[in-house]
Image: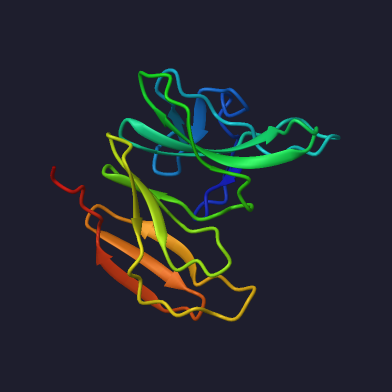
Length: 183
């Protein structure tokens, strides 16, 4: 496995610390193609074929927070996936979603983490404000319910200022990012 420079064709090896429980992850924006995770964060477990070496899972960091896409063994010896919120300098290990379909879309910025509902007709977005970790829901989406088994909201993306939701028809909706309510 490696990373290939599209312009030059040169292939770079993956970071040495990019392994389950390692401290490095790929970072294509870095000149060294690596990013060292802050303590105590570690690369999560990825899906591994029993006949091959373990692979690392994905981790998306933003400032002091990171969301890990982790594969784990269930009590019945099966394998399942989850999203886990972590924070640099702490032992935070908050499971956001458990039993997640592979590659389920989730987005993070310095203010919140958001993801579409997992229900059959998912017409809402769930989230957690950062750093408080207070949960919230966005239920007034203008998406229409698709015929089963399609999901209304296919993907969400959260930028510093905006929240984008893509529906099953390929329509893109935009709104200002969720703001933490004042108390």
